[in-house]
Image 1: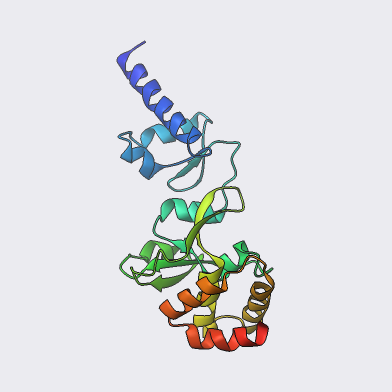
Image 2: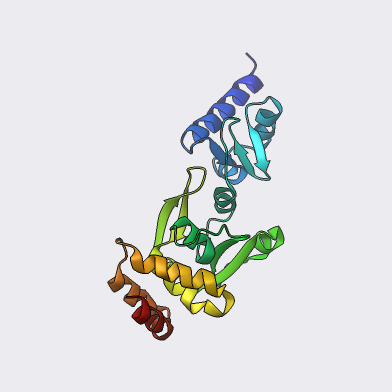
Length: 206
């Protein structure tokens, strides 16, 4: 076996190891960070070992990757929030037309804006990770999402830009949830300056 063939096999084996460790998905950025040329990914696509559902994302043929995970895989600073978080927490039965994500104010959002698929919200660096949890995306991948209490505060604060019916239904659903945490809700509301409007809603529902 030639030296070139040995190198090829070595790099492809490394990529296959990365795929096994990440549920059958790998990004060109991750491969590049591992010291491997992304050209090996193209070779694997040509040979039928991988599919490329979107630029920079490579998956095994048997793997389905949803839009949420694809977006997160290419934009590690985002957190799914607002209407997308309501949907993931079963606080609304409406499927959002666009994915709602929150990004720190200091991060460049030009690539996200170009997709045309995302509604972008901004947060301060100090509050960006507040209430961040990991949930399962529709196709079974772990993605960052704000918890129920942070999500409730966010939509109340953003009430002027939220469908009144979605807001009302979400708050009613939250009030009925046995796993709600009103103490945490109050802490978030104070930090995010949503205390006054939230109190007006919750006094009626609780």
